[in-house]
Image (cartoon, rainbow, N blue to C red):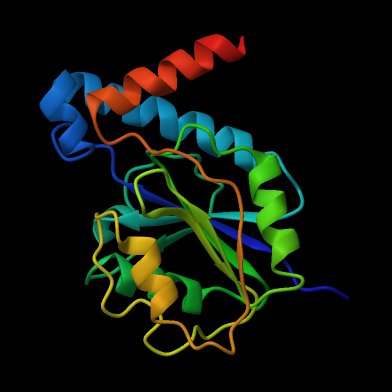
Length: 203
């Protein structure tokens, strides 16, 4: 019997003024808060309907992992814990039950079930998978087996154009890596305008 697949969405508790702060600088805190809530809700509905994987939430701040139900109450939740993004991702991935596991961010409007399915398919032949982001980071990371390679996320310049390159450079060369679709996240007002124009053009 094959092991279960685990898909984790990294989320922030949607508190006014505490989410999408760079976007808020361009469009205002209230508009950024509304955007984040709506985008996250749509993403969870989209990804949660697929039976090919089990959907999890990894929440920050930790106290909201078991607190108010900002998200569907049926979704299992994990606390991200402290440290930089790399430490938090490693902690969450290593805490999951056995089986291939993937993390995606909650600020990439274009994520669809086909992207996730391709990432899991890549893990059938590779140790690790990444979804490159347009800004030089990555919107998806996954591993076929855990625990993760020691120091996998060390010396990474997070929130920079070097995040993916730094991560790949630090990997053991014996690890096979797959790269899937390149997508764009929404950090600034200009990103939001592009995302909205793309959605309008797809209608």
